[in-house]
Amino acid sequence: MNALTAALDRHLASRGQNVTLRRRIGTGNTFVDLPIRARVSGYGTADLNSGVKVTDSAFIASPTPIVAAGAAWPGAAGGSQWPVIGDWLVVNGRQRAIAQVQPVVIGDAVVRIEGRISG
Image (tube, rainbow, N blue to C red; front, side, top):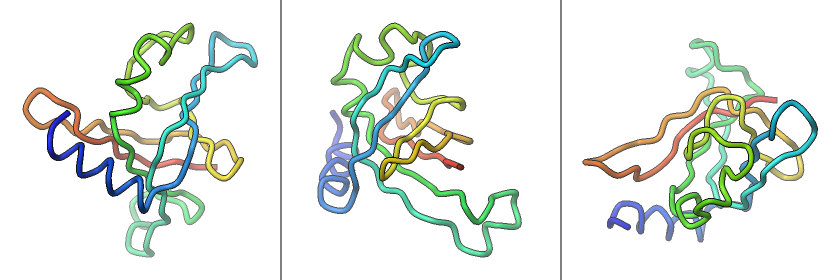
């Protein structure tokens, strides 16, 4: 783990919240869930001009729990190790669709994951 990710992990431990990263297995109602910490926040009015809805939220998550999960994430669901459009974050018991996501890479390492959730 690099220093940037370690700093993010400390920040999320004190200012983040528990959420669940979720991916569907196949087409049924079976999912792979991974508990993580994330910073979830609303958007300002200036952001609403770019197609962002007032009900959307931004999130920042660390790659640390995803890497630590190893083969358990995404497990039987397969696909990318990192969250993708079509995955969900369960926030305060509410399943919200990942509408935009970008792993932030510095050098060869993902140091954080930023995105937008809707629903």
